[in-house]
Every structure is written in C-alpha cells, then in structure tokens.
Image (tube, rainbow, N blue to C red; front, side, top):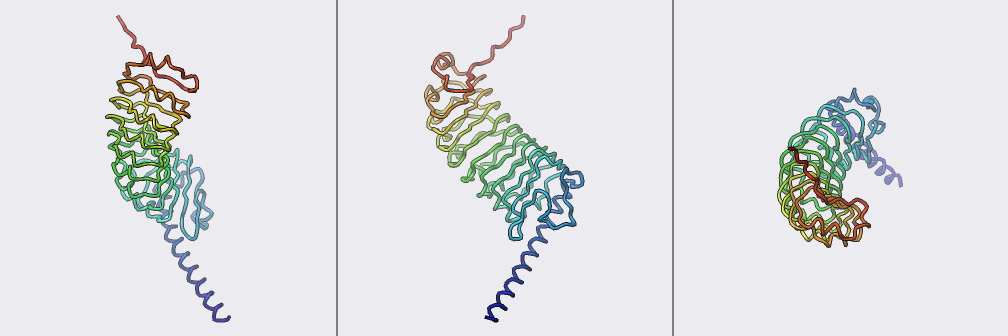
Amino acid sequence: MSRFLLFASLVLIFVTGVNAQLIEREKQILIEFNNATNGLDWINKWDLTTPVEQWFGVKIEKGNVRKIELPFNNLTGYLPPVIFKLKHLRELNLLFNRIEGEIPLNMGEAKALEILDLTLNKIKGFIPRGIGSLHNLISMKLGMNLLTGKIPKNLYKLKNLQVLELHSNFLKSNIHREIGSMVNLKVFNVASNLLQGPIPKEVGKLTSLINLDLFNNNFDGSIPNSINEIATLEALNLADNKLSGIIPLEILTLPHLNVLLLRNNNFYNVVEFNAKPHSHIREFDIMKKLELVTK
C-alpha cells in the first residue's frame, strides 16, 4: 500500500507540474492578446496579478484555455497571431468591439475551435485559407466587418459547420458549388456583400438549412428549383439582386417557410406568383420597386 501511495503521489506531483507549465504558457499568450487589444481600455479589465481562472471571460479546464468571451468590451488594436496558438481553445467570442487589422494567417492552428464570433468589429483583408483546417467549427460569424476578397474555396470543406455568417462585408466572388457538401449547415448569411454569379443548384443538398440570406448582392440567373427540396427552410431572402426567370411556384409549398423576400429582382412571373395563396407566410415581398420617372 505504501508503494502505491508513493506512486500516486509522484503521479500527482507530475500532473500538477505539467498543468502549471501549460497554464503559464497559455497565460503568456493571453497577456500578449491583452496588450495587442489595449487591455487597459477594456470595460472589464484583466488583473494580470491574479490567477488566470479569475480573469473576466476566460474559462480554464485542465490547465488549458477553453473559452474567451469578451463581447461588448471595448477591445481595440488588432488580433495577434498568438491567440490561435491556444491548441485547446473551443470558443473565441469578440462580438461588437473595435478590433482592426486582419485575421491572422495562422488561424488554422486553433484546430479545437468550435465557435468563432468576430461580428461587428473593423477587421479588414481576406478570410485566410487556413480556415479550411478548422474542421471542428460549428459556428463562424464574421459579419459587419471590412472583409474583402473571395470566400475561400476550402471553407466549404467544413462539414460540421452549422452557422456561417459573412454578411455586411465587401466580399466579391461566386458561391462555389461545393457548398453542397456542408450538409449540417442551418444558417447561411452572406447578405450585403459584392457577391455575384448564379445561385448554385447544390444548395438543394443543404437539407438542414433554416435560413438562406443572399440579400443585397449581385447574384444573377434564376432561382434553382433545388431550393424546393429544402424542407427545413424557414427564411429565404434573395431580395435586391439581379435574379431573373421565374419564381418556382413550389416554394410556396415548403412546409416551414414563413419569410420570403424576393423584391427588386427581374422575375417575369411576379403577378402570377403573387396571386397564389401565401397568407401562411409571415413576411412576403416579391415586388420590384417602381422607378420614379422625372420629366
């Protein structure tokens, strides 16, 4: 028994030492993050003299940083690359701050990341290709920033992704047909960008989709009939684009649809479609604004 107790004590000492080394290493990463985002100006500041477990918005498990939640906290400065070296980080929520600069190119290193929310900051530049390495991502929200460039093709490889919000940026590209592989996607919101090209028919493979929002872009071509196959769809917003052709009448038979916004496109069966029963749809607008003629 004494040998067993001695062995157990040695194991405990070893594990405690390893955990202490881990937390010290990750503490230094958090301090760099604090400095880069001007921690002295935060609303809820970190007292760097106290244990990391006491720092606002930080969750530690087994000596590793698992969550950083600092929304509405007046973070400024930039997002340092070192933050993505937190190998066990599952959630990074920096919603509604004033972070500038670009998303670090090494973001793919944070392979445990499940939730990323950088909505409503001032982040510019491209979405790094490294995003395709974050196979555990469930939710990614980058809306209301200053992002430019294309939606990286390898982003469509994130098959666990359920929420993808890129709205209100300056992204300019097509939606690739590989979107059809994102079978768990529930929310796809790329509204208010500079996106163009046709809506790929592969969106019909998104059989878990609840919200499809392509509002205020430059999409052209027709509405693919495959959208009629998304029985889970509750909200479809294709307004303010350059779509043409006919509005598929089958859209009205989608069992859960309660928002249908198609206004300001170039469909030629608007009158016919509008005459069909649609009182079950809470928000319904398919008309094109009349242009004012000035003499």
